[in-house]
Image (cartoon, rainbow, N blue to C red; front, side, top):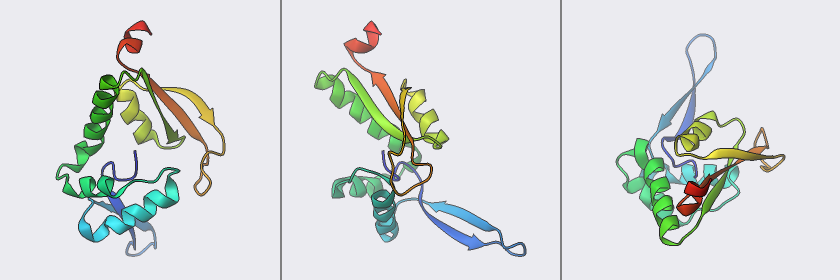
Length: 137
């Protein structure tokens, strides 16, 4: 899942006084979808097609977009008799790890130096058995 799984388009502003930086997040809209594309290209080893971005813009309920997409993957996988799903998550992305664990994914492996342009460069492989394989587990 890319950066479009919720709120994106971070902007940093200098706070008054101490010079500290503050980051605010915004939903995906026509005027900031290019920022999302740039973030995804820089951060993730996969490329998303144009439909992905149009769906992100069309979704009015950004907080549930990731859940809807993941449930769609589960439905398609069940229809195609796919028995397991795996994905990669950066090791410091606690929110994503918690999100996927909520759906029954488990960390099965750590891959060092998976990402080239971000720190930390390591990722976890998360896996979930689905369909009949889930009941055999």
